[in-house]
Image (cartoon, rainbow, N blue to C red):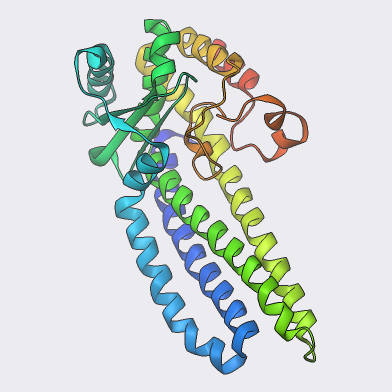
Length: 298
């Protein structure tokens, strides 16, 4: 798939994800309302759930970047200490043919970075202080070029919306699961109550897993493409490859990361045993070794 096909695909997937979210949220609210008050009670809440999910989707489109930055504890990069970073972003933006994104930072010694926003004209690149401290200039340039690849390819819109909507589904499912347990104490004596509670618990557990699988399916290919785009911008694939080695081998976990935003970072921010073994099957990032191999073959 070439670059323009990937951009068109990302735009289509954005709307597919939004529609999926609307139906999933409406279905969860219907099921939960049915358990609480029966069929009439459930149908009364369906229109409200639909309206709320639509407005949530619209809000995630326009404000997902601000939500992600706030959740990550990011601050605007201002002052002399960030001048080199701004210069790199500006020069590479010119090379990529995109508007210079806003630059933010996270005060954390773990090296990592991500990009967010709804389009190249409303984009943000965020790096950790650890990335600035631990990477050489060529390596930092490779990381910035990779993130600009996400900006240019419209990955940022898709993944920021996924972060907010998937996080919302997980929160609603968790609330539904807890509430069902409490409600079950009053309804377990009624005929069929136990079956309905079981269905609700099953749905509350399964829905976040489905959402995670969607993130996985959307994330892996985009990292390879952003690596290729970044290497094309710098004309020096080794810089990005060396950066990926340093970031992946650094053992400090990124405290600002969470399950909702982890897929946005250049390298999986969760370190240690959690990121190994069976967990790799559900990782939103492709293996770093494979990414480095592809870069060195360019």
